[in-house]
Image 1 (cartoon, one colour):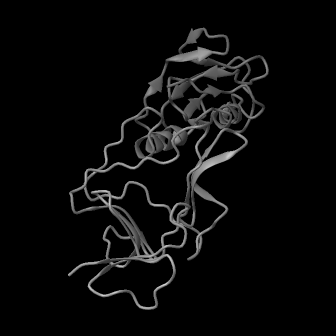
Image 2: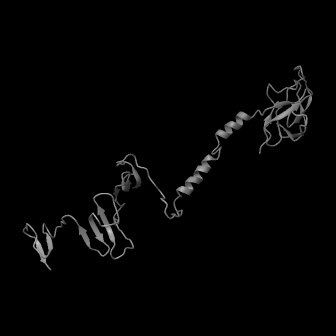
Image 3: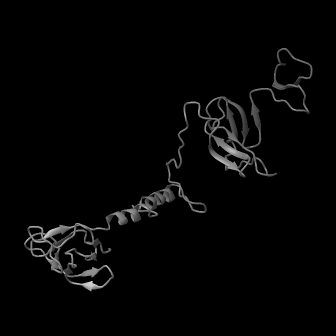
Length: 252
């Protein structure tokens, strides 16, 4: 704690009960105005010199002094009874407090919360079982195609970004592999599943599926430069309405 400054102002004078000034009078300092109050003698004058009592100046005014460590209220007695004296450095202390880097400790408290919720670079995050680590509330039912949940940039150009409506744009910085997917899948599992609707991990109702064994399943026409418009059919009967270039592999 620190010592508070008292006295030295126009309203701190040594006076009689009728208000008459008491030049050069000696007064005592107490911790309360009660009859059983304790006298305080751990006092320091404005220049830092220790003293045990107060002495008014030639005009009856009480010079500035520092009270005991941490005490904000003192009572002085120059013979007319104990009267409370308040600190005179309140304004300067308030200014120092307001101008402080973290006067209430709230910034340090907030930093600690953020460090625990969003660790700094290089920190390790332990993902708890069954817990959603990060949930982003997007604006509106349709989301926002302008804002991003994640945005990779070199300062001027936006590269890979996850937009607020859920779309993922993959643009690498430089000539790197744009997309590489790996997962420990079973032989019958799906590696890539694209649905015309909400995404699921299953092939039922999918428009395009890549199986774990490398096979590709598409519900629509597959077009490529080397196959042109050819269609491939298989089964015991030929396709309906065959076209030029169709291929039918009969079996059964």
